[in-house]
Length: 113
Image (spheres, rainbow, N blue to C red):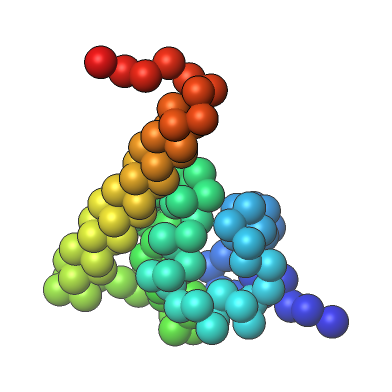
């Protein structure tokens, strides 16, 4: 039997659906990806980024309670979160522009001046 994502500390049943939307359907798959790659996938799949959700995930993968993150560790995670968020949105926008260019090339949408 596959352990759902929600078997990881700090993650509940709603997490199962959010991670599944990003193609992550088991706790082991999430562990294998790691927090940063998994959270990037979630953002690209449409999950709204939220810092507390990110650091709760990081803490959960370490077997720690979500509120165990404080001080310098929390500040460092905030910097990582901001980078993940920025890169995920840039990749998402790039994909959008690439799709738009492809549709334009085959005449599905009007060319922009």
